[in-house]
Amino acid sequence: MEKLNNIKYTLLVVLLGGVLGCSKSKDINAPIFGGTISSTYTNPVYNGDAADPTVIRARDGKFYVYSTTAKILESTDMVDWTEGGNALSGNNYPSWLPGGSVWAPDIHYIGGKYVMYYALSTWGEIHKNGVGVATALDPAGPFTDLGSLVISQDCGVLNSIDPCYFDENGHKYLIWGSFQGIYYIELNNTGLKILSGSKPVQLAGNAFEGTFIYKHNNYYYLFASVGTCCNELASTYQTVVGRSTSLLGPYVDKNGKSMMDNGYEVVISGSNAFKGTGHNSGLITDDKGVTWILYHAWNVADVNAGRCLMLDPITWVDDWPTVKDGVPSSTPTQGPTFNN
Image (cartoon, rainbow, N blue to C red; front, side):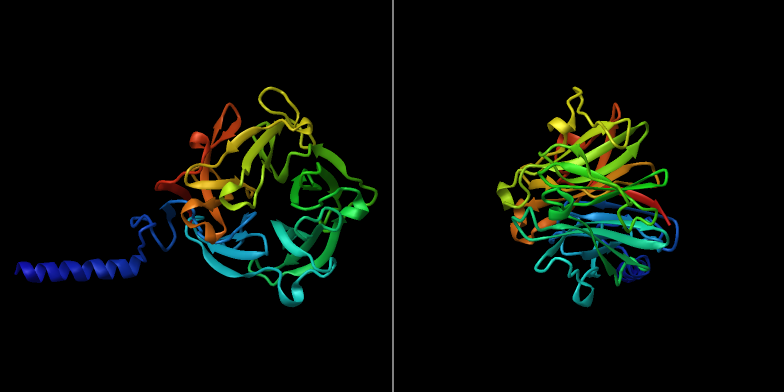
């Protein structure tokens, strides 16, 4: 009888596992059909190359990450990621800068379309590069390239890469730049062209790249990266921030030093487990009100994986964003909560 009971119990566990779709990263009590999704995770959340990530929660409820090369990752919980296609490839690949590669996209939903701003450049080039834009009706693509917005040799901003888009009460801005100053320019009401007569204005100094602006309470936060991104375990990349009461600055550190003078506060540094922690995506707030940051880092345990996708919660201390201990989490951590 005991043996029979054990067999029944084993069958029940197998059946429940099949119905619930359980995995070791999931909360097995979380409903699959509607209800709440909440998972634990251990960094990296994607142990493959996902450099310079940008993220959006699309109209279909899923999260999409786009990274340098325009590779697409998909997730329902920001914890378990699967590879999709490529947003810009084949006939859709930008051709306005011959020989250029797609870097550091920034994704948004504007005017009923998914709009991707991206950099086109070659390694080490600071004169012949620029920012372009592409659109799609579906987050998985295909994206149609609409050409360039700014090109370094035309707009006078060297190293015109690493775009960021921000909408302030209907005024749309492109923010961009890499170690040659961070600049902004106003876009037209579609977000797809430069506003006629608008010129680049400097926003931050030459210590920064990979910028992103986020509004929280009464402040705007200019996230950026400093240091070297791409020297594997010798990379010195850090995620940093300054804040302002105005979108267009001035952005300052805790002591009032301006980001125009390269002032900043460090948010995430490297650790024994991860190096080169930088180029964060936009921030996502879950359904419990917790803010989450995605960024990339080199995994010391598997450097050949490339710049992996990392996830950590942000804690706001005196209206400054912080990550626990100032380094990536490396042990199992409760992930975001989303109500489907």
